[in-house]
Image (cartoon, rainbow, N blue to C red; front, side, top):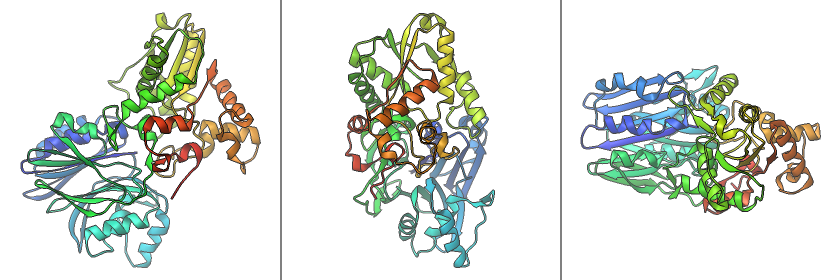
Length: 467
């Protein structure tokens, strides 16, 4: 996915930029980058963080940075920030999102006799494409609006100029941006959890398509927000850090409510509830509190040297990380009927290994309660699961096995309790060797978040797209 952090201050901003960007490390593990504007102009640094942590890579270079404004990014794809020299002046730019019509927009630019410098494997850098669209207009504000209207998918961005910083949320608000304030400084973040320990208080959440310009003295709205929004519901289920609020709604609180909803629809007899660390824990606590059943930790997570298993691009590495970082506690497992809450089941291969370990250690029953519905449709907006084919998704793969063809009417598989839905869930349960498997109902997830469904993107579960 990726995360952004930017700051403008009266005094030196480097420490706030460094730690604020680091607080987004849970959103990606491929590249970390900083750009600072100071007395001598722009300075930037880009590091690969696949084999080390952001802090370890950037601490040695911090003394070389000085400035009152800066932007940072944790990214899972293209190198950024990019430094752009144009008729609009010099600016640094970082983006998060996914441009689905990138080839169409590339050809549009080439027809105008423009060119691209940043390519990887023959594909242009999406951030450079966004900057090219911005530079088609006479002002940065109009350029950002031009980019947001042209891009199909999503693209939130920060632009650092000589005079201050622009922050722009993607057209339908799928990726959030929030403004924070403290004495002498303003900051923008993808995750509000970056603010408290740096002394910032949340001022406002940007609306879909909104652009603001920030200086150390305040901020001005440059492009008004649109009325339509489809923020990614998966942010609350999985991506978001527990201390973060999106649209003023806390991630951990939503996970607790998700767990409570799972419990209200469940009567299975168990000895205790557990969560698959880390994002499954909040769901499990909500489940345990609702049913008044003990919450225990039969798996503990070893984090010092293992990255998030979801992020590495190679599937073999993902599976290895998933296995090595979770350590079972035999004395809590042996002879027990255990129910696990998990944020989701994407492919299921990692989960299958963990479940087998539980039975090897003497578990009598293992039940699974994912906090969201079955993943059937690949994400088109946030680079989620883009390294996998559609059939790699556990739900879609099983549907294909049942039907034996690609042209399938999915509607029957989206209705909990229908014969096709029940067959799909039982196939997934059997493949994972679970005693029982019961997914969250979409309406219960929407209720747990607390926004109207039309203001949420739920595409990966029901294939819907309102706009």
